[in-house]
Length: 112
Image 1 (cartoon, rainbow, N blue to C red):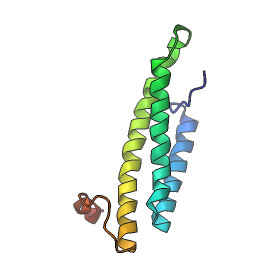
Image 2: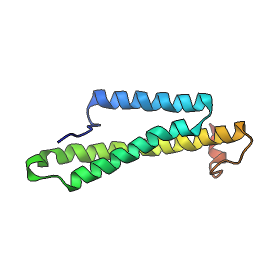
Image 3: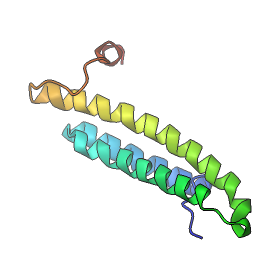
């Protein structure tokens, strides 16, 4: 059974670097669609981990701990990339003089 293991330190480091680079790229070119890429990938990863946990057979019961920890990392990355998406969407809206999707965090962006 293939598992995308986010508890492995090397994998976690590579995922953090790739996510950071995509967020930085989205911030530099002011395109929120670039920041949405890791968000969608982490959502798919979470769905895959939930399906794997729900269909885990007795032969692979020892992997349940790894899957639950990976789900926690998925939730954490979803939270981070969602706020990054909102931030970059705000930057893109200001650049194009458009209304942002959600202006409820304007007070937060002004503090940063």
